Image 1 (cartoon, rainbow, N blue to C red):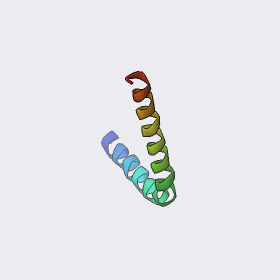
Image 2 (image 1 turned 30 degrees about the vertical axis):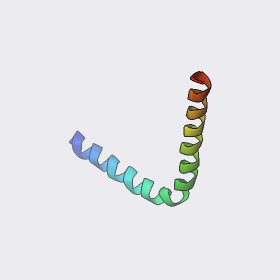
Image 3 (image 1 turned 60 degrees about the vertical axis):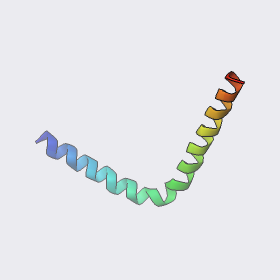
Image 4 (image 1 turned 90 degrees about the horizontal axis):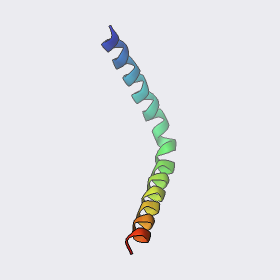
Length: 48
């Protein structure tokens, strides 16, 4: 019973994510790129 409930939640989240993906992909890419730049900058600062 719990497994069916869990699968239902996962499917609902996947549908919700697919609906949101079109408007969230670009900000998510910018966020990931910003985090990568900050991490690289910190590494270069500590190990220069």
